[in-house]
Length: 228
Image 1 (cartoon, rainbow, N blue to C red):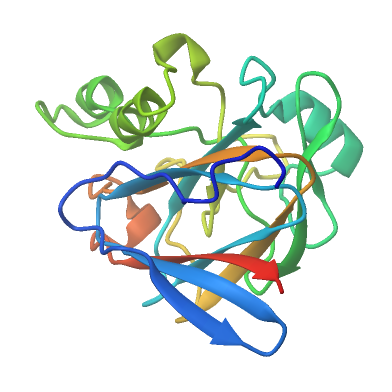
Image 2: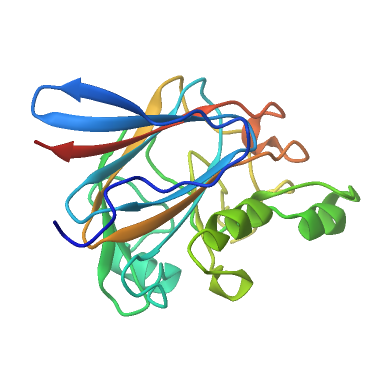
């Protein structure tokens, strides 16, 4: 044992289904379906893989990660982008921590070019940007997921947005909507290999006020895979 509780811990809304074991050649996986606006958090042991699947296409997924053994070490966008030499992450890129150590490696990506600068939506930013009050955003989902592991507001850092596009034009100006409609196809996926015991926190984005989810948030699947 690596000292990590092998049960995949998750705290969630009622629109998240229980883990379902899946057996395949050389692997054992757990599959979790997360409904629109749902969230999940859990520990991915070192060398195991986390796969996020956009089941219906066009759905944004907000993502944070931490060293599960010492969560004060967490995802660091500047280190990640400087190492990648790009604002958009894909296969072969590493997600670095603030200690300049890899937390995850992207080993497979059928989307290509995941956003790193748009950040997460929130109740307060929805009011600021769109004049909409009383909504739940990815920030609130992050807080719920982090709470399960004794973490909170001060532990939220700039996140990755899988299957999202925030274009920057040649004049270095963002789109009027910041996010543009996701081009993720049905079944688009990204797989991350844990390079340490990693805490992953995922929000299946509920945003309907900008075009990132085409105004219609849909479900995603999460798979945790280990060689057997």
